[in-house]
Image (cartoon, rainbow, N blue to C red; front, top):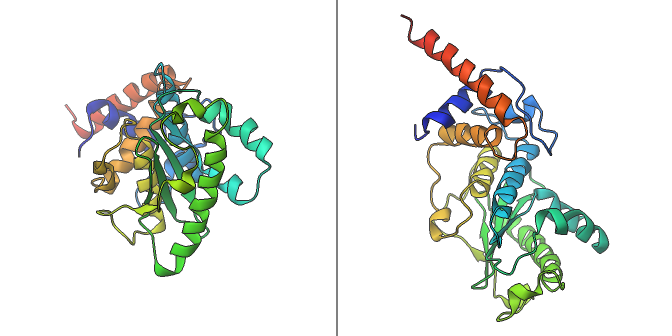
Length: 260
């Protein structure tokens, strides 16, 4: 199914209702994690936990090349959060200081309860909309949402902390050209499927190419891979306990499936 042995073992552990896999930052409950089971809709906490894992992984580099923002960033901007609060809540934790910024990933939960992703290619510079639930009716609303978020990011880019990333280009995203609708992706997925796609775009290695626009593969396999990546993340403080428990769960599963 496209999973390696470790991912398979962790997925079996998660879906077997054994143990209590949690995250060290987000209050990730069992119900949140099990929302990754087939046919259920992944919770917003799951999406943001994957953004957190990706952000932590990006920070391990000496000079981070990517920012992975939680969906609360766009939500706060769209509800008119005070600008000082944007700095306080998001800059230090989600926007590490760097001089090598290449891409910014912004998941957005629309009012119709479907997810889409905005990706900024800082080096080009270009802005992409990865939207697999777009309709004629919602495109104008989403264009305004993305424009508002981009305006906030422009202000962040222009701060003394981040301006060195823009020595040869403008930090003002209004001059980057129109928002590009990514081609080669589905256009009318269900709300549950849009969450899986958002999670998938947050869980890749951090590089960027047009391959990210393409099909992500079998959805059930994706759900298992995402669940295992959360509980197996290096930034999960309970990882040693999870690893030990998942080994025991896997052995019990193997014995049940392959009796002597």
